[in-house]
Length: 473
Image 1: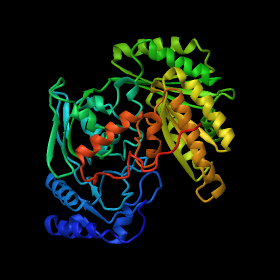
Image 2 (image 1 turned 90 degrees about the horizontal axis):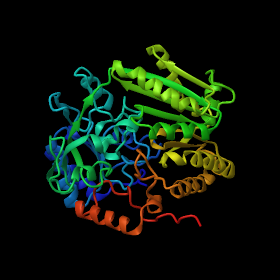
Image 3 (image 1 turned 45 degrees about the vertical axis):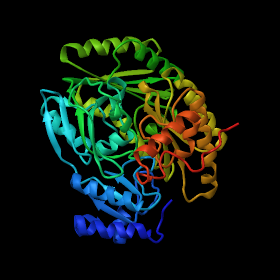
Image 4 (image 1 turned 120 degrees about the vertical axis):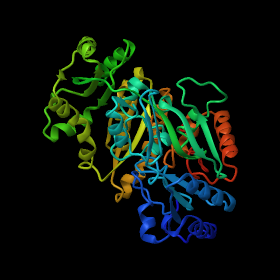
């Protein structure tokens, strides 16, 4: 992990050349500015040798061509809201900031598409689309601050994925710059296209290791006319998981289906929220549809939910009621800070039918390693945010963390799950990639990386580990 060491000589030569070609105002080299790009949402620290503030395609091409020629690492970055260290310059070199490339280039209601640059903030895009009665379904919980470039890089979808699918399902085409500084375009403006290999879907979720996205053609869909919210509390995780499985098997799922475990409910009660005392699991559902259909959809879901004997079932039909129901979900992150200074936020996923085994297994791990673990997330996808609560200043506590993570990931893989549903692998999970991918798959991915990035400059230190962690016996 790069810290405050002396900059690499190659970086200095590239930065000097970039100042001459792009202008000194687009190249940051002083320590105070570099500190601003040394952090992300993980709390990890890695200071780059310099930062390029790209505002045009030419800026990106020039930066990558020079870095490729001098074998200098490049870390693409938009808002820096990621949870796996994906936007950190862990091997030094240059951070290529795309925040200034923040234009919405075209909104086309007739073709239901929008063309954007990577620095556009997700919520700002949704606001602009709303005026046309449209929206882009991917909506991470950080939508007010995260940028489209990061959403594409990590395939970060959010609660809407339960009905609408993930980011890959909503991207028609890309413009990107290769490691050598060449422009490549993938996909098309058509909703159906099977010309050649599907490079678009390969590049979405590639975490900036194969190219730097400079434009994206995003697919849109009509915004539902009405949204109703439901809150359901069960006496056991098993009952809640059975309800989720039944809903997902019964037809069109709700537009959001969120889960909170008993630890979450305990925190909410301490904060003064009225949660039934016997409640061990809570589901939040959002039903979005046309006016003529939404009540029928709510009734259908209520019938399914009632089969598993809920302690409470509330339907919020007014905006103020819905806000109060969702307040429980949004209050969790601040409340977790009352338990520990830091949370290690993992976003594993398992088949929905195996949710009870996951939650019960996580409770056993928490007891075994003596660390608090709080779980919530996107139940309809089996995508649970596993929050391990630690104090970075307590060496005894921090010494337990590697074993805890080993056990969490081992459990997930044994349940036919995946290491990440939306955060990506990045730097933090790279040592575990081989736990999920077989040797031939991993070797093929390394060959793809070498083909796209022969000098290994694009976001090095991410995805592939120099020292993979041994699996548990």
